[in-house]
Length: 148
Image (cartoon, rainbow, N blue to C red; front, top):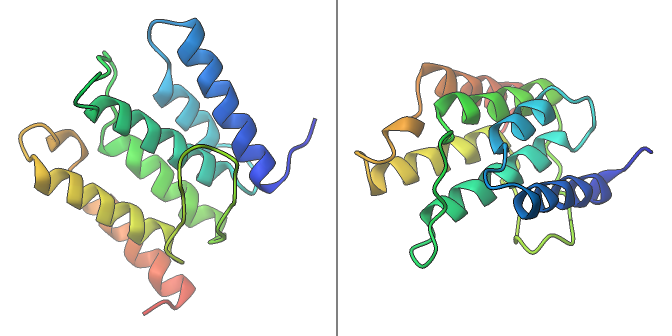
């Protein structure tokens, strides 16, 4: 079955929810990696939504998620590269409970998010500190899209 736009994103979120309900530890990074290598027009959006959900659950003060395979800069860079390769910068509306909207240049938006999380707690968030690939991907995307 082929999904389009928000339907694809919603379906991926449903699959992630099913994993969360069925298993003690959801393979978030595997799902994200698969999506980053997917040719669907909205796979990058779904991957970023799932990463956001993962980070939000990890940082929940009332009920923090304990996970043995935390997202790293490589996880973020996979999404950055997926966005850069796609050339698509569309906002995708989904019925997902997460509110979601993108800056017209998703890679620069994601690098900003990485920096914000890192700056809020450098010792805990060293794992997602943007590296040269993060910045180079965002800069290349900006120049390609001519969003100065």
